[in-house]
Length: 112
Image 1 (tube, rainbow, N blue to C red):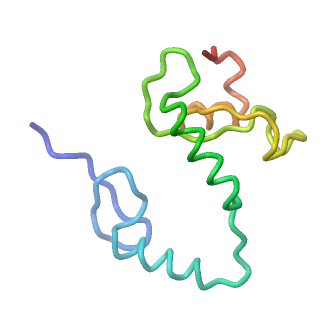
Image 2 (cartoon, rainbow, N blue to C red; image 1 turned 90 degrees about the vertical axis):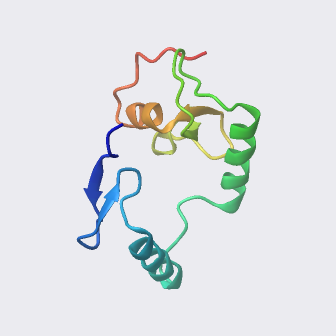
């Protein structure tokens, strides 16, 4: 069995396994600094986070046919940048397919 792939922490020279951008110490410091910043607005409201958790609990799979990823997000069917809203239609997508869709590369995705 081989060793896990490693990368360098974003904020210090420590080597860490792939998955998180920061080592645990730097991640704690980063989150503490973000929480203390009075100008920081949350990206999504608590209501959106509750809606996302409920949708992912109800549908624990990606809506793209054949995808088996379990790293799920709640996707706006119509992007907010294009007139969609948090109250509009949504679907569960894995982070990869949500990123493809957001980059404009996902037009040919087949949804379940």
